Length: 213
Image 1 (cartoon, rainbow, N blue to C red):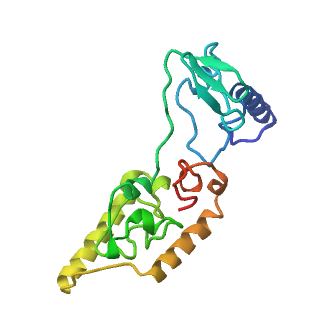
Image 2 (image 1 turned 135 degrees about the horizontal axis):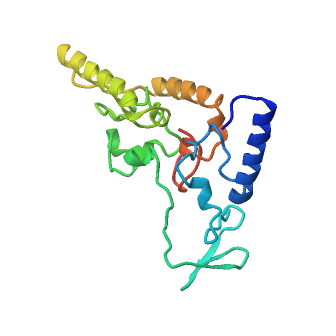
Image 3 (image 1 turned 90 degrees about the horizontal axis):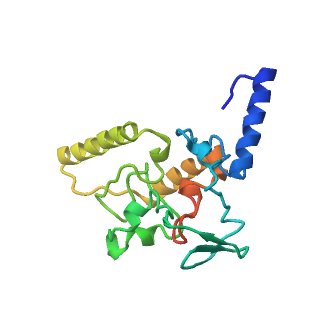
């Protein structure tokens, strides 16, 4: 990515951009909204004779055959091996896939079925004494792991120390605190380029995922 804007650099950037978009169909182009694909040979692979890039949003898979895959345009693509890399249920999945139950037997998945609500990205109303780190509505995907979980761990440890010192046996987020925290998170989110990206908490990886968190 070219930052300096001399005439020669603009020309070079335009040439590289046109070549990359031709070989990649212009798909991996969401700069500043995804992790940049700067790995060695990433773009070179698209120039190999045995590689084709197909936009499944425009031309979805119609069926699997004994030879490979038929796409919506009726073309059969023959393969020796098919790798089903369908992604994962990011951030929220680690909690919703576990049968964690709070007050009244409600699960986390049920709690978040209409949207994710937390306080500070570490606690949830209806689930007393439950803390989590690197979860939704925290800087999980926008920071290096240790720089996120270290202050979270310190905060949780300090809460527990405060509870022990004051002989408290229960701590629980309030719905009001969740509303305030979610409002602040979404207010910041809606000012970022990532709001339009098909990634993370702004995209439905699977039908049951939340649209935004």
